[in-house]
Image (cartoon, rainbow, N blue to C red):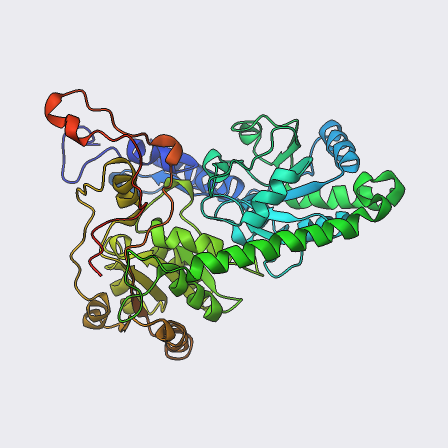
Length: 495
C-alpha cells in the first residue's frame, strides 16, 4: 500500500532479481495469492530454476477462500517427428560421433540413458562446463569436461568428431572457448542440439539439427531406433570401427592423464612449494583422492576452484554444484548447505578461495546453529587470483585491490564453534579431509580446512575479452605494453 513512499527497507526487488530468476510473480491483490503462488512453484519445476514470488506485507492479513491445486505435471517428449528423423539419419551416417552431455541430462535423470546410447555406438562422451556429473566418470567412454581448464581428451575428441550430439546443453559460449592455446570446436562437424527449451536451440551455435525434446527420452528414442537397424546400416559400427574408436579414446585419455600429471607436479621456479606452502594443483589432486564417490561437491568461482574442474569426476548425477556462468562469488558453502539439507545421508564438501569464503564465512554460523554439517576447503593464497591473472598478463604486474592480508581461517572457524584445520604440507591434505568427513558424518561437525597455497595461477577466464592497454595520455604512456607478462605468473610471490 505504501510502495513508492520511501518506506523502511523499501527497494524494487523485482527489478533486482529479474535477470537471475526463471519467473517472477507479483501478488497485486490478496485474492490472487494462491494463483500466483502455484504458478511460481510450477514454473520453478518446469523451468528447472529459481522463481520469485513478491507478496506485499499487508496482503498477509485478511481472509479469502481458495481452491488449492496440486503441482502441474508437464508431459515431456523425445522431440518432434521430423527433427527426430533428421537427428537419427545424421547419427547413422556419422563415422566418428561424439556425445556432449549437458546439465539437461542430469535434470532429466538421463545419465544412464546417455551411457546406453554411447555404449551402443562406441562413442566417447564429453561433459559440458561444470556438469562433470552428466556422465559416469569412471566409465571407459567418459572423456571428462570441456570448457575452462577441462579435459584435453574431451576437447581433442570433440575436435576430431564428424558429428557432435549435444544432449541437454545450451552450448554456452564460455564453455566452448579455446583452452590450453587451442581452438578445439570443429568447423565442419554436423551439430545436433537437443534441449527441451526452444529458446536455447541455435542460440549460441547454429546447429544443423535442432531437437526440442527431453534429454532422457531423446536418448532412449535414438537407442531404440538404432537397435531396430542392422549394424551394417550404421556407419560408425562398420568394419571394426567401434573397436578402433575405443583404442583411440583410450589413447586420448592416457595422453591427457600424463599431461595433467606433469602440470600437477611441475614446480614453478618463481614460487616456493613445500616447507609450508602447497602447490594448488597438488592440493586439489590429494583432495580428489579422498572425496567419496557419493559425496556432493560445490565449487566456488575463482582460480583455484576452477582448476579443480579438470580433476573432479562423479559416478552419480546431481552430486556436483557449480556456480556456472553467473560467476557468483560466495556460492560454494550455501549451495552445498542446501544440498546437505536435502540429502543429510551424503557427505557435503565446498571448495572455495579465501576471497570467496570471506563472502560466506557467516554461513558457517548457520551450519552450526541449524546442525547442518558440511566440510569447507579454503584455498588461502593471499589474493583474488582470477582478477590478479588479468593484471599479470595485461597490466604489467601492477596490482590494484587483489592482494589480501588474511587472518587464520582455521582459527576463525574454531571461534565460531566449528572445527578448523590448517594444512601447509602436501601429506597432510588427504588425512585432513578424511578427518573432516568423519566428523561431518559421524559427529555432525562442520569443519573448515585452510589450505596454505602458493600464488601460482591458472589461465585467465576470458582471454578473448582482454587486450593489452594502449594509453592515450602522455602521463600514462609508460604503462603501455607490447606483450603479455613473460612469466604468466605474479611476481610478488609472498610465499
